[in-house]
Image 1 (tube, one colour):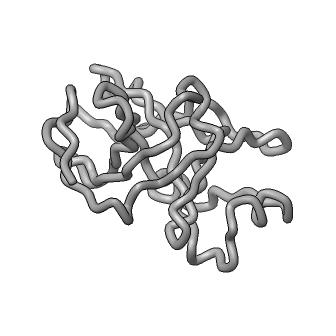
Image 2: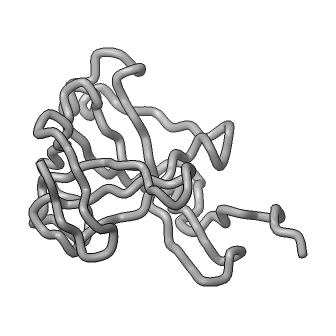
Length: 145
């Protein structure tokens, strides 16, 4: 299948790769079906793109590529709701806020998107009891002139 997007060009995908967000994603609750594709420009980023609205694509990244000790717990209810049988069946990404100034690009560590890649269902969580920031610098101290 093909999706002609406004910002990312033509994206090809298989129907089996559609991830369903039953509750939508905060800010886009009306959109339920997304695909996750690697960003062509940078292997750190992915695009979580709606297949219901060609204008909506969210830049995301794996938090483990940014913060090696990133962790949180999924309670039993959430594990059951997302039909998670093994932790190997989940892929976690977090939203990225882009900026023309490299040092101002941030990742939201407070609200991970958990995707069960076996069942193709996902949900964005808000971590209540974990002290991760909403705007964690992606390139903290790594830029030199």
